[in-house]
Amino acid sequence: MPDKYAPRDWQPHEKPTLPGSASTPLHPTRRRIQYGLVGLVVALTGGLSNALVTANLPYLQGSLGAYATEMAWLPAAYVMTNMSANLLLVKFRQQFGLRRFTEIFLALYAAIALAHLFVHSLSSAITVRAAHGLVGAALSSLGLYYVIQAFPNKYRLKAVVLGLGVTQLALPLARVFSTDLLEFGQWQGLYLFEFGLAIFALACVLALKLPPSDRYRVFEPLDFVTFSLFAAGAAGLAAVLSLGRLLWWSSTPWLGVVLAISIVLLCAAAWIEHNRRNPMINTRWLASADMLRLGLAILLIRLVLSEQSTGAIGFFQTLGLANDQLQTLFALMLLGAVAGVAASAWLINPARIAEHLIIAVAAICVGCFMDADATSLTRPEQMYVSQFLLAFGSTFFIGPAMVAGLGRVIAQPGNLISFIVLFGMAQNMGGLLGSALLGSVQILREKYHSSQLVEHLVLTDPQVAARVQA
Image (tube, rainbow, N blue to C red; front, side, top):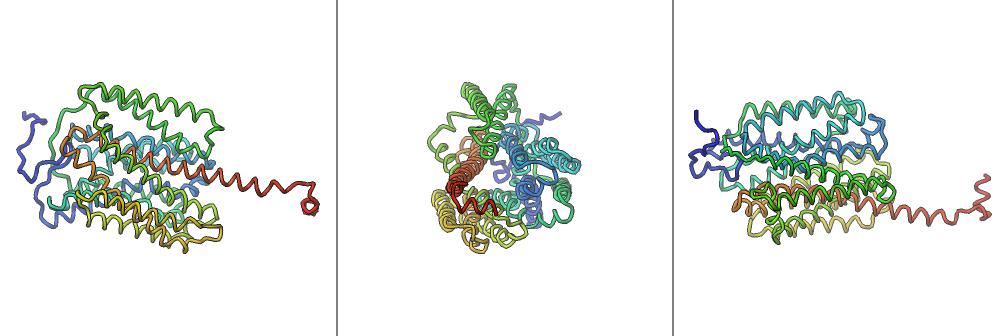
């Protein structure tokens, strides 16, 4: 019986770029188109798993009979598991093969989507969202592998940018069409659509399988210790950042306890990995100047982008505007995101990564500056250009940021998991930090202005007393 872990004899153009990735044989044009379409379906399926809930959180609140602070657990639960999932998923692909990985996790995704239809309480909804975060991470990488198959080797970088960018289109896309699903079947309509999409994606990957890849014996017992510590620490950190501004940082003692425990757990995981002979997370490589700069850049860009998700959308929701009144704005945001992906793929050049990131940040800064004078009289029409620029910048930066790290990973394939952890943590933490920071500033300023308004409303004032009596 042949050894399933024996390396295959690849042609130069077929050899997988990284351990666990698919080989890249020559495909006819028709097959490339099929791979591209399946990649689009799989990537959007993975992205929509969280986007449909995030875009409709206020409307799901009534269906589940929960308070706003309780509903915040739904997106938090997704991020809590999604952030650490790749620690094991990458090694699973490497040891058990990409095809088995594809079929198992897409089947799990469909089963979890079906479970959503039987959710009738907040606790069960949180459990299902946490499970979705785990399998959602698998679908993001799977969609990328399919998109890569759709392009010749000379366009590999463009394929990587497109594969990553498609996942980022899920949230603006969900905001455009999910209102109709709510009108059709309330919250069950959202989950029924998600289940149907998952079944369709599963059928697609079963009909069109990825090319084979090499398999390696990579799992070690200590991997699961590191994963347990890292996953628990990251989950606690995500919970604190998601709920802190709603429960308020200094008014809820358990937030401080969870934060302290999370830091201890993450430090313990880092200590174990730092002293391992064959670490899953290469702390020395992550602490290099280049990787620290890249991680900080991704985190800060994600932090600034909270102006769109928490600032503009939250601003209009506070003013009482519903999703159906924001459809044109959402459509322009989707158009901006698509333009960002297309421009990034077209212009990608490893020698000019810094310029790409500067363009993305410049677009975001201009958009934020244009919205800086918003008042209660501001309406969506006045934010069309600014939100288009923000959406453009949000997808224009993601591809170059990934390519900047991949170049170093290809030179040292053993650092693949380390880079994916850095990339995922920087993205998720940046988004959570941005929402927490911006939301906290909004609450502080609202309390300040409220106190300024009411400090003169005392009954000793004759005008106030007369109005109270009237």
